[in-house]
Length: 159
Image 1: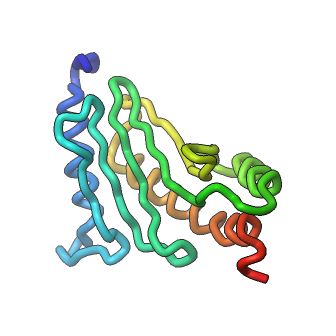
Image 2 (image 1 turned 30 degrees about the horizontal axis):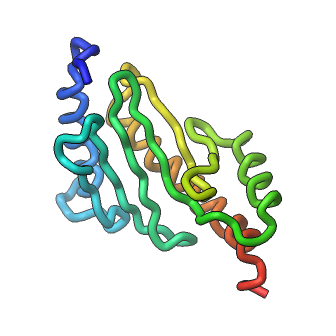
């Protein structure tokens, strides 16, 4: 990957994301923010740097947000639900209808037909406040949709 953006360079974006994410894990008084269960990097030497942020959820026990730094964008995604076993069309329709109310993310069918929230941000718009907004939005959208989608996708287990 070339260092297309000068300045800031991709290395500077990478360092900034590292710092911002680790800053979110601490409260202003220096205590650990209990909402953040883990923040870590993907494998060293990856062509595109990756991070994950694991949050403690209420409706969904854990919410993991993945960030991938590309040459021009920061892509992000959160796993919401495995492939539905029942009411498949209704689950996907419900998720797609929710897309109309979402800002900066959308429901998508991913690997093995699982339901994800995904989005992308141009690097020129990337800053600490925007990264915080993304994490908060994906958390909120997942928490709101998960119970509804889960009960539809696995209805017989809740009967």
